[in-house]
Image (cartoon, rainbow, N blue to C red; front, side, top):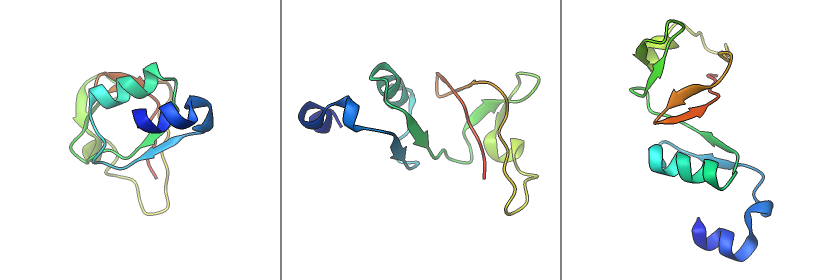
Length: 89
Protein backbone atom coordinates (compact mmCIF):
# COMPACT_ATOMS: atom_id res chain seq x y z
CA UNK A 1 0.00 0.00 0.00
CA UNK A 2 2.82 2.40 0.83
CA UNK A 3 4.42 1.77 -2.60
CA UNK A 4 1.07 2.42 -4.28
CA UNK A 5 0.64 5.69 -2.40
CA UNK A 6 4.20 6.75 -3.19
CA UNK A 7 3.44 6.43 -6.91
CA UNK A 8 -0.15 7.63 -7.14
CA UNK A 9 -0.77 9.54 -3.91
CA UNK A 10 -3.52 9.36 -1.32
CA UNK A 11 -5.77 11.61 -3.39
CA UNK A 12 -6.25 8.81 -5.93
CA UNK A 13 -7.81 6.49 -3.33
CA UNK A 14 -11.55 7.00 -2.97
CA UNK A 15 -11.97 4.06 -0.59
CA UNK A 16 -10.06 0.91 0.29
CA UNK A 17 -12.04 -2.34 0.28
CA UNK A 18 -10.41 -4.91 2.53
CA UNK A 19 -11.27 -8.52 3.24
CA UNK A 20 -10.83 -10.28 6.57
CA UNK A 21 -7.15 -11.02 5.91
CA UNK A 22 -6.30 -7.31 6.22
CA UNK A 23 -7.08 -7.08 9.90
CA UNK A 24 -5.73 -5.54 13.02
CA UNK A 25 -5.25 -2.39 14.91
CA UNK A 26 -2.00 -1.47 13.17
CA UNK A 27 -3.58 -1.58 9.71
CA UNK A 28 -6.67 0.39 10.68
CA UNK A 29 -4.67 3.03 12.55
CA UNK A 30 -2.39 3.42 9.54
CA UNK A 31 -5.36 3.90 7.20
CA UNK A 32 -6.90 6.46 9.55
CA UNK A 33 -3.56 8.30 9.88
CA UNK A 34 -3.34 8.48 6.07
CA UNK A 35 -6.95 9.70 5.98
CA UNK A 36 -7.94 6.83 3.70
CA UNK A 37 -11.59 5.80 3.85
CA UNK A 38 -12.06 2.06 4.12
CA UNK A 39 -14.65 -0.68 4.20
CA UNK A 40 -13.34 -3.69 6.13
CA UNK A 41 -14.95 -7.12 6.38
CA UNK A 42 -14.42 -8.46 9.86
CA UNK A 43 -14.36 -11.99 11.20
CA UNK A 44 -17.37 -13.35 13.08
CA UNK A 45 -15.41 -13.55 16.34
CA UNK A 46 -14.46 -9.84 16.36
CA UNK A 47 -15.45 -8.16 19.63
CA UNK A 48 -17.51 -4.95 19.51
CA UNK A 49 -19.44 -3.14 22.25
CA UNK A 50 -23.20 -3.59 22.42
CA UNK A 51 -25.71 -0.89 23.47
CA UNK A 52 -24.60 -1.24 27.11
CA UNK A 53 -20.92 -0.99 26.16
CA UNK A 54 -20.32 -4.68 26.91
CA UNK A 55 -17.99 -6.44 24.50
CA UNK A 56 -19.68 -9.10 22.37
CA UNK A 57 -18.78 -11.16 19.35
CA UNK A 58 -20.13 -9.49 16.23
CA UNK A 59 -21.94 -12.68 15.18
CA UNK A 60 -23.79 -12.79 18.51
CA UNK A 61 -24.63 -9.10 18.33
CA UNK A 62 -26.03 -9.30 14.80
CA UNK A 63 -27.10 -12.95 14.76
CA UNK A 64 -30.81 -12.15 14.62
CA UNK A 65 -30.53 -10.51 11.18
CA UNK A 66 -32.38 -12.35 8.44
CA UNK A 67 -31.12 -12.59 4.83
CA UNK A 68 -31.60 -9.24 3.13
CA UNK A 69 -31.80 -7.27 6.41
CA UNK A 70 -29.28 -4.57 7.29
CA UNK A 71 -28.22 -2.94 10.52
CA UNK A 72 -26.37 0.33 11.08
CA UNK A 73 -25.76 1.11 14.76
CA UNK A 74 -25.55 4.83 15.57
CA UNK A 75 -22.18 6.43 16.17
CA UNK A 76 -18.68 5.06 16.06
CA UNK A 77 -17.58 2.02 18.03
CA UNK A 78 -14.15 0.64 18.86
CA UNK A 79 -13.04 -2.19 16.59
CA UNK A 80 -9.44 -3.40 16.94
CA UNK A 81 -8.52 -0.25 18.86
CA UNK A 82 -9.93 2.21 16.31
CA UNK A 83 -13.25 4.02 16.46
CA UNK A 84 -15.20 3.24 13.31
CA UNK A 85 -18.75 3.10 11.98
CA UNK A 86 -19.89 -0.42 11.32
CA UNK A 87 -22.82 -1.99 9.55
CA UNK A 88 -24.12 -5.41 8.65
CA UNK A 89 -25.85 -6.60 5.54
